Length: 61
Image 1 (cartoon, one colour):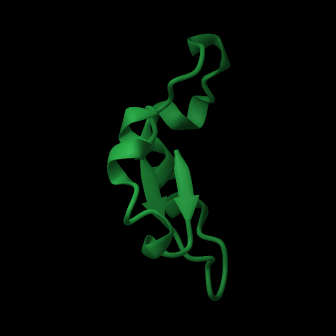
Image 2: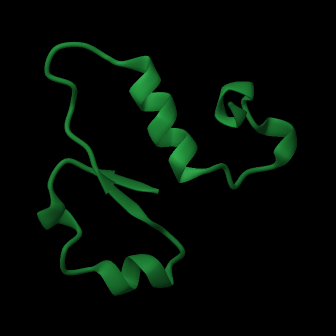
């Protein structure tokens, strides 16, 4: 997963990003504070592609 602050960083490269097996998300830094529940939800939406033995328990909730 590529995480960028500006869509312009990836807008001309959608096909190449997909061909290489990546996805992308545009994510700004939090302005006020870190929201753990929102971050966990986002990472859960992305899914886990590593070894199942290394999956964190919180990603399965």
